[in-house]
Length: 395
Image 1 (cartoon, one colour):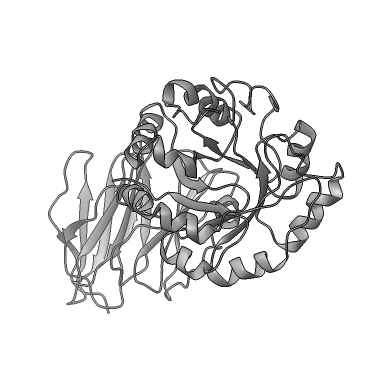
Image 2 (cartoon, helix red, strand yellow):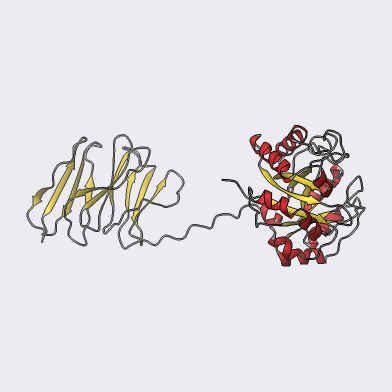
């Protein structure tokens, strides 16, 4: 089963972001001319309203995308942009972006072989830091010839090795005359055959392009890709956010039965196991080995307090009265908890079993039957005896 993928479109204007979102677009790459230029803050609010990621492409073809001051990227983060990137960033600019936003690397533009713009091997050979980075690499050279995995593969592998979270491709609008949607499917499949997850793909039209017009021109290409990798609904900021910590465990409500304790092993009093019946009637267990571990459910349907014994070999046996009145056993074999098994018997309502190991090898269980007779069942280390009456009546 294939995974979902990121689909973006780039332009310096747009007419209907809702239509783009309906087409599976999740990231809008808004283009400005760089050199410290500012973008209208309405782009961020428009993207938020439509459910898209506002991403700023702040310069290409050697145009510096910032003004040399860290405050430039700090201000963009304050405005709500999710990521900033371009094609020819300096190492210092990349670090500045990652300290405030996600860095977006387009990489590979205009080099006859793709190595000069291999950002993570040449421009920024250090690891990804801060808020992280994504690389949507260009797939063409200055003559608009399509690059394949043989050219792009090394750059993608360097990106992965340096910690880039998303690695995908960027298609130029002029490539419609030089390639097909299938060409990019082939490259994506080669990426994954070489251990790199295909993160997604989008189309770039450069300055003067309207994002909706670009999408409409390449709609059939997007649909071909989305038929294999369905579009994600998660914006870039949320894709890069760390997973929220798991919720704290809910307090366990216990039934009105006394808990039971037993040592981990014969002769060991410093480490022990604790058993109690929860309000869900299941048997709950936790261990103490110098640290108190969390409760875990062992299942079952208990109608009495548990009793537990330890025998040689670090074996533990826990016994309770079940809903059918019989004694039920849960066994730890030294490695894992085994399934519940019934030992039969008919316990008087409101009573439970008692158990003891006299020598670390044998086990004796005693119960009060429904007619107030005391019964005993014994384990000799190999097999269980039948239930035997040991007292005729308990008054």
